[in-house]
Image (cartoon, rainbow, N blue to C red; front, side):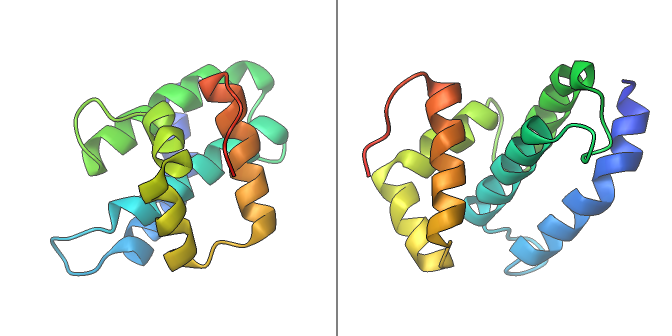
Length: 122
């Protein structure tokens, strides 16, 4: 799938996420942003058709989300970095502060295990 098509499909959601994560015009809650983007990725993998994609488009979406993450969270940050953060002590504390539900945590942990290739400590 072309980058322009992915932008048309996903930028409205990403723009909304950025708005929800804004603390001020210049400051974005990067922890919250990482949880949102990790969730977008997980949902697309579980149901590509529902996400407006073919399964073959997942690689392009992955690359696109990595670009968006790098622009907001910092250079070199990726979906993998998001999942590493989510399963870290700091990430777990952030999930508590964000009041992420148990079901959502289970979802994120599932994808963290897949992406990081290891078991996740509760």
